[in-house]
Amino acid sequence: MPNLPYTLIKPLPVPGFRVGSASCGVKSPDLKGKRQDIALIVADVPAQAAAVFTQNHFRAACVDLGEKAIREHTTDIRAIIANAGNANAGVGEMERVWAQQLIDLGADVAGVAPYQVLSASTGVIGEPFPIERIRATIGEAKDSLAEDNWIQAAEAIRTTDTFAKYASKQFEVAGKTYTITGVSKGSGMIHPNMATMLGFIATDAPIPADALQRMLSKVANVSFNSISVDGDTSTNDTVYLLSSGLGLGYDELEDTSAFEQALEEVAIKLAQLIVRDGEGVTKFVTIEVTGAEDEEQARTLGRTIAVSPLVKTAFAGSDANWGRIIMAIGNSDAPIQPEKVSIQADDVLILKDGNLHPDYQDALGMAVFAKQEFTLRVDIGLGDASARVWTGDLTHEYIEINAEYRT
Image 1 (cartoon, rainbow, N blue to C red):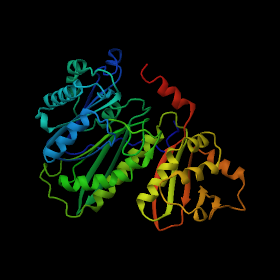
Image 2 (image 1 turned 90 degrees about the vertical axis):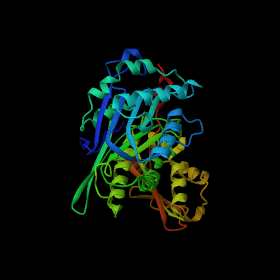
Image 3 (image 1 turned 180 degrees about the vertical axis):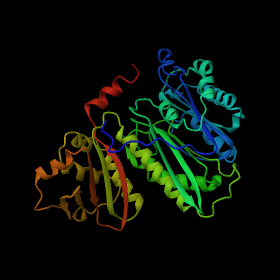
Image 4 (image 1 turned 120 degrees about the vertical axis):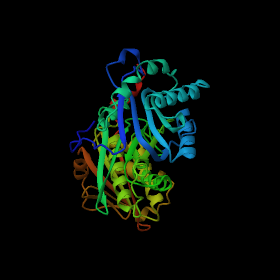
């Protein structure tokens, strides 16, 4: 994992929300009392809610139940309960039973109705879900509920993550300050639509659910759907966004532009932290695609480069093998005119209009690729649209982590 270029700042409390955690030994009874693995977020008032979910067709039951709750009770959500260590996915008929039991436990400790509770699970797929171990210790989450426990929640949803991920942002509208705080987890099985990731974001900005959904879907596309570690999309990926503002009696915001900008900043920060903590990752690479006909074309091309094993191993070896980059460009579904393509690594121009730049020297490219962080810019010369994607390298450590994941 690369060192962060900054220090994470303690997340801010969000009016109307309390957060708790518990150590239940979800992955193994031996871990009980040694690490937090249940997160509980409670809204003190009915919260407006929005969500985005995995597009993997083998979806976990918690995803289906969460989607149903958002659809039917989007203006009356009171809690999120999440566990790490077991995905409760791929286990047949009991999967839905266990998922509902987790929701029921969350409702009980939060003091709300089950239909008001959203759930999420992450961890090993295909293992029986240890609902009785959770039942025995879930009271810890209730006892620890506090406004400033967001770091504990971020710790509790970690799997192979090496650090807790969180971010906050405050913004002002008409003289009143509002807060957005979010936590996320993710390290491997990370690829757009979305990733092996969970994200929970709360705000006191008074925004109705339909507007929250519209903005979250838009923001997710430029954040959580613009990262890639290994090209795999999981069964459980979920991002929930809750607002307590209307329940607190605030007047609905007429202008939501400041909120949307703040939400985008928080989401991008959380998404980038996932890439920085990618399994075995030693490089953080920003891929900027410009000159596209539309944003989707640019993002598709960026994702193709980001997920290429040959490109990612070149990153790992600090090898400015630009041939692998044009290979990935050519493999994209985006239409390409090779004679218009230019490639630049930081300030080093490698390819210009389809030709190797006469001033390019391999040593210059190698120096950029040896950096812990750099930007790869690809211009395809077809239009004015652009997009950014974040990725890392692919190292031996990634294989080691995933070969030993269940042990």
